Length: 389
Image 1 (cartoon, rainbow, N blue to C red):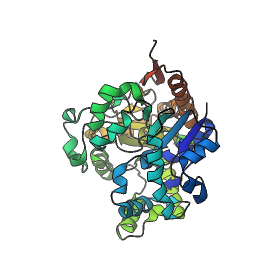
Image 2 (cartoon, rainbow, N blue to C red; image 1 turned 180 degrees about the horizontal axis):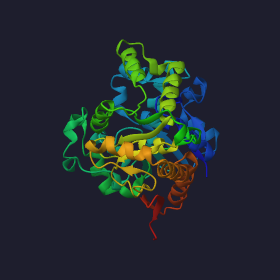
Image 3 (cartoon, rainbow, N blue to C red; image 1 turned 120 degrees about the horizontal axis):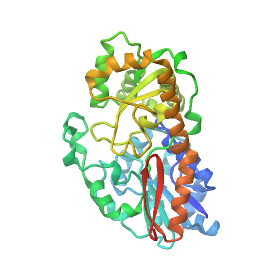
Image 4 (cartoon, one colour; image 1 turned 60 degrees about the horizontal axis):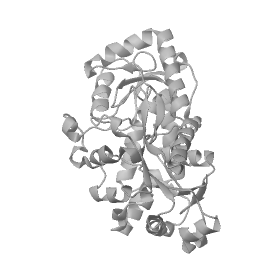
């Protein structure tokens, strides 16, 4: 099985894209696109590259090689892209992305796997015309993880509420057989192994302050419970607002991630939620990977992903319980350590780059045999649905 990965080589705040590259290497993929190859090769085009490599069974590509609206205002696109990412090549090479996209869409005899690397509730409706093509499959959340916005009664509490839509929800209800149902991937280098008893912070609230996280953090700050500082978030946001673009500076980007990881692997407990959208955000996976005990409001499909209350995570029922439940967890050291350890085992076994590589390989083999009929999760196991089942 020959795989071509067509994308853009960059460093981003979220390590998911980097982990996808590791997954591609595990599958012996060949890389093409800005940053992966020279400008001379880019000038000759992806068709020439494919021919020189005697063709591929699959082309796997990403967000930036497919979206037309990114090129409606090309200068703005380049500015926004490089504001939050460090690139390893001259900015002018980004102009080749549209050529890659246009050429890939002309290919009908090769299966294309498209990785959607952004919020499934914020996708333009006309974008799905591409995904409906017979030879295109999509890596993103399956329908067991997505709700209609009509069922999200408290979505108005989030700042992003006005931009959410049901475009993806409507798509997967008709094309779930074309979805490879996973979203996040945890690199083996992200796993930490220090015992809870050796950690300096009792609980942390990491990442973007969605409504639930913000409320929880406010209550925790009123208590004597020891929390890591979030001053670095404020500092980086300030630098970004004044135009310094810290996320495009490789040193500052690595520093941010180092501080983030330090705070997380020094937290005995870490709280998170999937926002009012109830989707499986990355924090559900990276908290247990860092061997912190996951305290959470479960999202859609949480049990299907393998999470079990009081076994590998602890469920929070309401904001008001946060102080009592944190104190209870801290006081029962043996149980807390056991839950944290089991949480890490779940992520390593089913949601790491090695696991994702095997899951994707199973999907590709079924697609190649013209027998793929979608995928889903059940009791922590990734399942491939076959046409002849």
